[in-house]
Picture 1 (cartoon, rainbow over the protein chains, first blue to last red):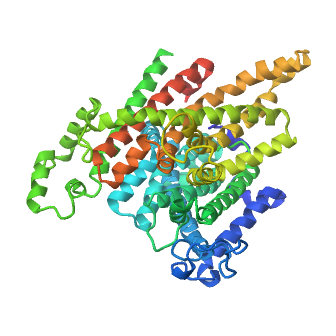
Picture 2 (picture 1 turned 180 degrees about the vertical axis):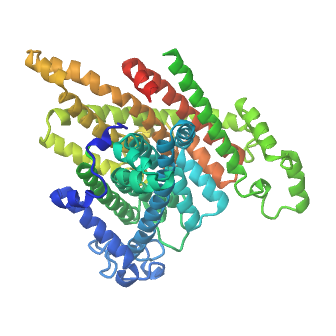
Picture 3 (picture 1 turned 30 degrees about the vertical axis):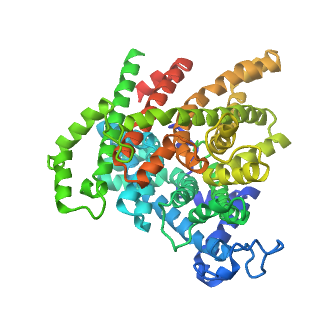
Length: 296
Length: 309
């Protein structure tokens, strides 16, 4: 990461103005729209889902989407092997994907930003230790670590979020550290220090706000990653447990029907891809607008 | 240069020590590892016996020291399920994983580098647009879903390739594609932006102004410099691919380390899980060490920049 990145980046205070001034690209608008629809559907799932996602209707097992010959109009995206409505399950699954994703990103940002601030600001031994620990977490195959931990502790919602956060804080720590290294050399920091500000206050009031834009960009791109990550754990059977519908779990179910019922494995995957695509588009736009030199 | 090499080696050792702490901790996560190791209905007496056998009544640091001294010699103990040394099982399955990972990476590089460079050279052309849509989709497509789609279309539907197993080159095509797609997108993006950056440099403009032929400027001057950051990417990407192999191997029933690991986790085969995590992390550290050295060779400035920090 180039340490001069912050030279052209905007501070947190200027960010809203910069975002408002710049006309959003088609990609950004598309991303935002898809994301709003997805999160709206997730929040309102109990109200808008046509069926109870756990309701099994064995007479209507493995019905294809409505437009196919055997499809039923009341199940637009078809039903699964237990006769559950796929559209309702996708709408409800969004709650887990987005909810877990957001929580995990928030938590991992909290860990990573704190450690990054510490490392960049204090330098020396603190910096060396934090960065080596970061290297350790980069070296370990995170999905295996997460699987091992979740399996040992039990696959609860909280454990899944914790494990995801603990295995992904490094991104935040690295970017914040690099930024703080250059921020701490600027005049306003030594000025604030000369006025007798103590370290913690200095960090929170003066250094952190100036490192905020890259954090926002990384957080957005990490959200996309976390959504894929959560579904991967679910897919492998170590995410949030049934009967709560999750996209990853639906894909795992669909795996057994690849030859006979293509819609089982197609629509949940499409939901994941669209959501991730939307978040990525938004993240790219934020980066290009707020901090064009950031390479993440 | 030698000092840099020494420091870099020391760093790697430190990282591996850290890995060993985490791997050791994995077994002690729930407090009492015997509960992980024995079936739920085990008698109190069996629990006590196993504790004594594993030395679990010793202080934690002593247990760690013992674990480390064995691990350094490649001894992670017997796999519970298979009753053979964990390392033997890894040695048997690692070639399949390396084959898959290398194929995925090769595929990614072969497609992504030319695509990214062409997209940069013909900026804003139709080709560039197609590339960037491909990059966006590639980065949003989870490997497990792509894998399922590939099986559905090319194995079940068209019957061109086998859906599972490892049997000759044709069985490698689908898993390598699924695994490599994400890296392909990232590398293409890097190659494009790297090439654009180099093309905007003064020496490229100067060379053009001095009448050096466009072909030479592009393929000799610019390409060489755009290649440098790609070298480090390849190292990191290899690590990501090793992680992705866990899922890919599960989907395609590819007999590699990843599938072995998933299997070990579900059968509570903790020595095997520890050994696999440690081996994959070591592999990652070594590859990145080598990549760093190549990088330093290609761009000697890096040593001084890092020393200055």
